Image (cartoon, rainbow, N blue to C red):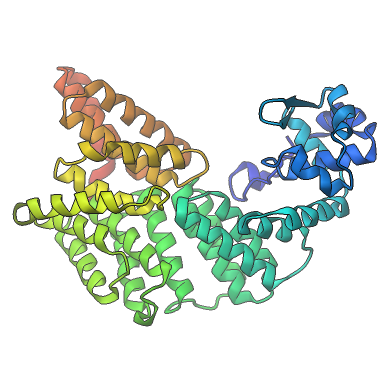
Length: 448
């Protein structure tokens, strides 16, 4: 694969279609270049819109004749599924070859056509952005708004790429900086985490050394950096200091801003892993100051962790109402404070299916930070109820994901769970080894 050195190192996002080496391109080129122009155009549309069926794409070619796909089928480039009426490329690298062998003008024209066919804002904005060649604020704004809405509903990692593209299309430097910072914040949830510092560095470079302190971008920059420091380096104190400053700078007139909510949720993770009264006090103060529209999960979590003796029954009743009130298509982030609180009060059993559903929704291209948290919480609950095999399986799955995506902080509690299981089974040597690993990592960071 002909990736750049920066892409190989994770300093730049990978392209949507991995570039082929000359040898691979030469292997696929003859079969593709022999196809009729109408067939090649249809294959390009199908490559750029993989979720669309041939029947949906045919009108865009100026023909309703499904036989236009016949030459591609005969050449062994595609396989049609008669049940789903969809087609797939064999091998999948054919998609990269089709894109690579098309001209930039052909790709822009195809994206423009797909934007006109799209019936949802995200697809329409994405294809319009790909069809645009220069700065265009209307397209950048549409792309930003559509994918941010998608992210808050479900955490799609595609939002990071979309915001980077929106930044490229931004005519004004301030908008470019803001969108790069927003991309960095979303990347801190979706991973891999090594994207975050490079996106923040790009934002600083685009800012021409102008400070964003005291602005919305400044708050998001602080939140992105804090989440990165917490998850990638386990720097609880550094994350706490950044969030204190960001909350001090935040404009209370923006109480409905989703970015204020992001600061509060970033602070919640610091609260849980720092396990210090002053951090929980900051969350209480911030909730009172900003009074976000849906603060119930955060307040229930605060009460469960800080006053479990006085609020046990009240919080359990509140959790039951809050879990029941969650829409089936709700953003998973609101589930996390409730899950923290439920595990703390040994009340997760009735809600495990909601956590499992969130994990399955987010595992592929979603918010990996939430998947890892869900796996840890389920593992903890399984351990408390004597389901050691299940607890171990969940913890090991979490460790593999944490390693793959760079979430160093969460390795410690997951390893600690495995140490507890080993101790419960009488494997003292294994328990001691895992405990020593956790302590050697956590002690210098003063992590709870």
